[in-house]
Length: 108
Image (tube, rainbow, N blue to C red):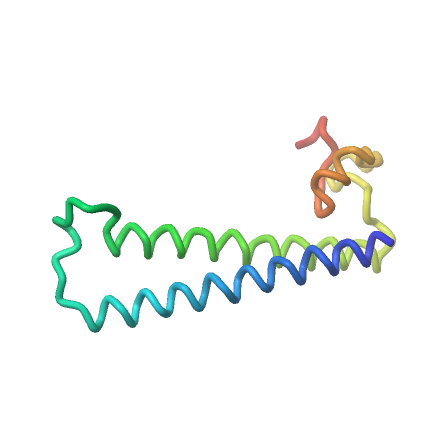
């Protein structure tokens, strides 16, 4: 059951990362084809800001994938739900909120 939930979480993160990567690529292509002075556009965010925002969101999605992969390895090793710092069980509420948590609340 835990494995299934982690796999669903990973699939969602992969889909999000793929969408963000496509959006970022589209932004790069659009900015190459445009000679607009977006740095001085009073209408809104600059292309640079949008690129930075998409890059940050993509990094978070990729980090989530890595976190879930690490949690899946802990499931396989029968150490899932055990704090890596103190060795005590990680509370069910914490695991429900962060299924890839590595530390109990006291150690986090």
